[in-house]
Amino acid sequence: MVARLDIRKLIVTVIMVLIGIAFLMPFLWMISASFKVEEDVLTFPIQWIPENWNVVENYKEVWTGSMPFLLLYWNSIKVTVLTTLVSCTISCLAAYGFAKINFKGRDFIFLIVLATFMIPPQTLLVTQFLLYRWLGLYDTHTGLILLNSFSVFGTFMLRQFYLGISNEIIESARMDGAGHFRIFTSIALPLVRPAIATYAVLRFIWTWNDFQNPLIFLRSKELYTIQLGVQSFSDQHGSVYSLMMAASVSAILPLLIIFIIGQKNVIEGIQLGGVKG
Amino acid sequence: MNSGVKVESDMVQTTKSEVRKKANKRPSFSGWKEDLAGYAFIGPMFIGTSILVLFPILSSFVLSFTDWNFVSGYQNAKFIGFKNFSKLLTNTLFLKGLVNNVLLILAVPITLLLSLALAVIINKYVYLKDLFKVIYFMPFISSIVAVAVVFQVLFHPTKGPINQLLLTLGVENPPGWIADVTFALPSVMLIMVWTGIGFNLIIYLAGLQNIPKELYEAAQIDGATAWSQFTKITIPLVSPTTFLLFVTGVISSFKVFDLIIVLTNGGPANSTITPVVYLYQQAFVELKTGYASAISLVMFVIILIITYIQFIGQKKWVNY
Image (cartoon, rainbow over all chains, first blue to last red):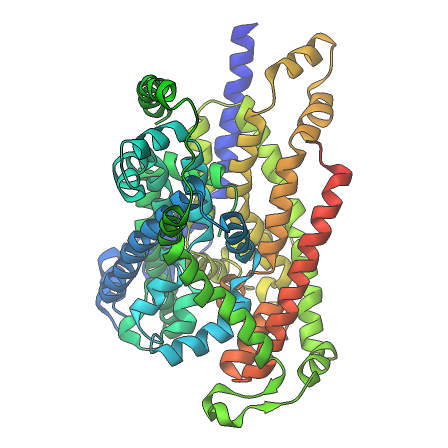
């Protein structure tokens, strides 16, 4: 009985692996195409392993050519890392406040913050754009960083974790004379570290992939992030598919690395938070 | 992490109970000092949200009654009452966008169905669970811009690998995909399903793990087939998850932007235009600030209504 079940499970696994490969076909095709000389990209049947390799030339053109990915990478890393840091700090503080401090109007304010989660960000673009021009934040990285820093999702998710810390720890620390800031830094923060790591990975991925905000709030080419770079690159080289694929691989690769490292955190985080935001 | 919390709370528990003996009453911390601490902690978050979300909503409400473009300076803003709105509701492009958006919502149940099926298989019938989670999750974490660029080539009507394959398989007139007015929107939906499966699958897996195993064991003893276990136990018991995913899926179908802008830019012949894409074009290409604000407001109201209807509707079919 047990052995028969195992064989069935094995067969299903093999079938699922095949479906999985089909599912990832666009990625495999993209990587393979980025290694080829242009003439071979669209030959059929598809050469999954290139006959004529052109890796160095393709990636060199992408990384140092007219839309240099070296600069785009630097911009993206700068914006993404700073956004992640600022956003984690702000969400962590707010989450602690909403979960563990009994202040006047708390539930009402939390409800307002939560309600903003429902609003499609696109409906805010026009007035955010005007506000940014007025504040002098238009076409700056600072502005871009601020846009993704006030995350309802992050606050909500971290709040769930803070709620899991027993009130008695907090109260006894209070009785020993510790202020909330002291409790926050020395008790609460260490306890939710795994949750913060999860949120940090998610925020990193979302900010790295953000296309809409850079498109609207950046104008100078030297400030472009990777996503804007891929789009303008494909506008410039729209018919040179091998280069476009090398650009796409370059845009996705760092994320895949981060995801594979933080894989468990990301998946659990999404399950806990339940919603993307 | 949990074990850490427990150890510490146990330790504190003992001191706590000693203190409680002395005080004999749970001290409640409140008063202005507590209020102040609270405001200090949530302050940055609340101020940021107010400036970047609440203020823009209020000001787009005001702007939507004006005829203005931001280049011409504030003094040239002209109050025109409800004209923007009446213009909008008779605008065929905006209405077409709305219809397209309703069609895009069809991608949501398709994604849900495929994700649930995959989740059930991965949860019970395979080895290497973690590997499959990673595989199906990859499109979800990949940048939509890069994905759109790749599919632009894959969908190429004559030279693209997809149609070459269809031709060799004997399909005589393969569709033109994103170059074809009738197939452009389904192509967008196809990519939406592909990128959405990972997220839905992960949430479903969490939902499946909450179903008590005894239910399946009891059903097996009663001789229920795998299919009737699926329809009588699994589907009803994951209905809260389905509801959650349906609501977030519908709302996010209104947010689809990157994919369409990069893949088709609303074309061909506006066949993939959505209200959000129309909003972008009016605001940042045509520079009609007042009109675009009116679109924002209408979108905002539509989403509110949809969310409200969904929460009423859930009572009818969700088992909690």
